[in-house]
Image 1 (cartoon, rainbow, N blue to C red):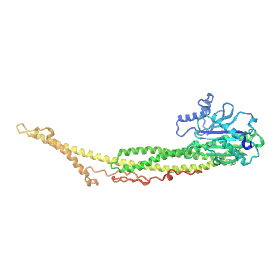
Image 2: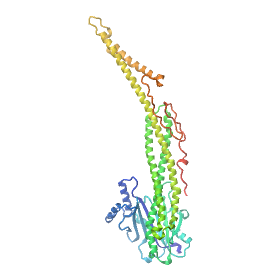
Image 3: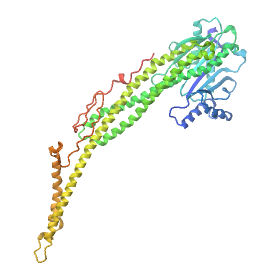
Image 4: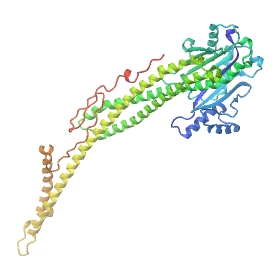
Length: 533
């Protein structure tokens, strides 16, 4: 077996991240997040002696804080591993580290076959993690000591490639595709590999691995080397923070992809409403109830769409904030390990991801906000137009009702007057002294008497005459007369932008449109995706 197939004291670290307090989440959901996180370590039942530590950790307010009083929780059985839970801002982070079974120092310092050791350690890690997936993402770290001082750069890359293939977390693994960059810090060789999710927004497609190869140092076991031991102890918390920023960026971007999919579906509904408006308006008889239903549907879509736009802006801000923190972390890491290394830029090889974020993620979300916000403005104009149409129709209906009431009132008034006059005359004629001859109509049934007949005739004829007067052209043009129309007219609703209007025989001040191309093409407006690197 060659030295390229072996490493001394192989360790695998797994970094898992979960959202602790999402924006707008209820206390119940926040408590559920906490419970799911701790169940990764303890399963369904928490040990009573740990409950006090867990409750006390919830009261801490520092940006980075340990969640266990003892800091570390050892693995069960005889495994050489532990859990290290912390909270970073609004995120739970869990570091799991394992080197296999607990063995003597002599056994630890003996080179082991990479292809056998790494899969075995990974199975142990999987067995110690209760089945609650990380909601924000995860990263992996493999580190160990080289078995020889005489390995050239090609041999070191071969070792790193063997580690990558043995871990097996990348589906259809291909080194040339997944390998991103290499670096060196204080004699330690680093190799970074990653694959980010596509635009489908599936966080399970996020894969990230960092491989650290410590120098052989003429056979001095790294655990007994103070500098190596100090670096191992200090660098893991720094990686916890760095990988947290990285995974938070990817999580926010996948959230934005899901939001975009939802808004594209809503935009199809918006377009269907816009395309249907001309047919509704040009119909022989405008259905006011149908227009009100359309308006209600538009308002519902508008509310949900505006909320998604706001959420997309939140994800944009999340990416920008964590990108800033990621770049800052790379700068301060050397000094955090040792003040004398201040200004060292060795960890800038990890800056490849920040450049990818700046070139892909940020421009893509900016382009999405621009195109999707245009859909929101289109829907807003549609709502204003529909409201205007409804207002015009209601005004016409109210005006017709007012005229009808006025005509009926005049008719009843004339009828009452006529009946009163006729009745008075009839009463005088029928109230003659007994010696005088009684008129024949005085003994008729009241519905056949002249007063009743004249009142009915007046009630029928007077409204008809008034109706003719109201429809006479000079009165319609604003001349003084009986019950003239109001001088003011309701304001016209705004036309839909983007070539949308309608034509209909409406009163002065009405609106109309003819369907036009109101949106950019799918390629320009919605599917304006920034090309991957």
